[in-house]
Length: 506
Image 1: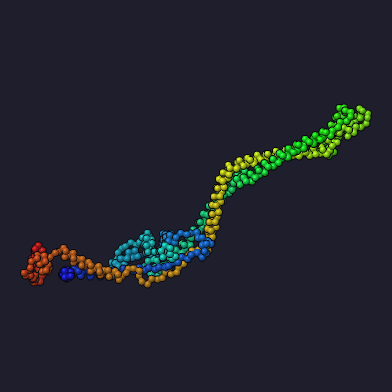
Image 2 (image 1 turned 135 degrees about the vertical axis):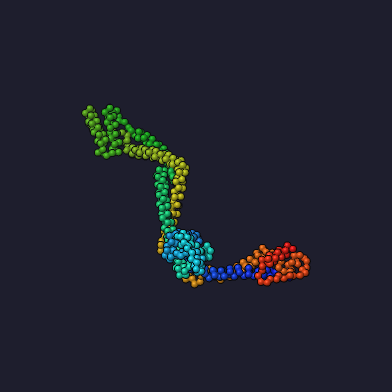
């Protein structure tokens, strides 16, 4: 404790001995700092708060087209609002940065002390950079906040407030414009993609339709029906075969009965009689099928009449009766009728057998080709289903985009609302004059103290008896004071300097 106290008194003694080196820079720097604090150009800051209102229609009914995080959208809007054309218009409308002090605050200080400097006005690029640096837009409450603030720093309070309101209006207009353009662009893009998807879907539909028409009956979904039909046809073929056998047996039986019923006349007919009987048999057969006006029936009757006339002239015995020369079929019409029906039924069964056999071959071919057709159809169906799903998805998105576009045009979507308008600032934002004055005072004191220590370090000497005794570890017997009769002569100054150097050497 005693050592620290001695060190403090020693430093205080140094300051007192070189008090002017301490006082002059402290006073000078303090005065200059206070003067700058009072004369620096004052800057005012005006701010406004804008709240982000969510869309008035629930998102479950209309999904917004733009789901970009608000922080990113604010950065995009900041770039658009702070574009060169918009900033130039604001600068020209409010005559900003037209004077040099607006660009260099120390020019005003020099003018106040009577120093005029020929400083060139700011260029357009410098004005734009200064304007961009004076604007600040940030989200309130972090990146997920629902409000943001806009502030502007200027030299005139009223102009600063007007510029801030103008910037807020630009942000609101840019938000509405950006959201409308985003919704319209989305709807237009989806319409174009939907047209392409429709064309692709129609092409797929035509391909599927052509495939179905080409392979009708052999499609994979018809396999079960084809198998059932094939089973039915095979069963029907078996039934036809059985019925055909029965018909053949019945035909043979009826033909045998009909032949047994034939009884030849007592006297054998001559050739004319045999010919007459054959023609009568043919006439009877034709009459069983056709009417009397049929040409073949008329010809057959005419031939029978001619043969009867010929036999009458040759025998002179009178007209031959039909019953005498009629075939057994005519004399036994019931058996003949059953025989005709059996023959017709047999012909029908044979024709049906041919048809069924042909159908069986056709269906067997269909069943054989079904696996290959199924693979082709699956490929077409897969492409068609993908195209259909894509078309339905795009259609749904287009409808939602159209709703979102109408929502933005009617201003029912997300919008900005000013909840704290920009006001005219009453106090300067900067500089902080009190802080500058206090810092200048402390800076002056520190500069004075530093100058004293520097001079003391550059010019070492023993100024106190205790310092000499501590350095030599010898007692001081006497102290000779320095006498001076006013101003020191050159020799006296040299002598004093020699003494000090010797003391330092010791």
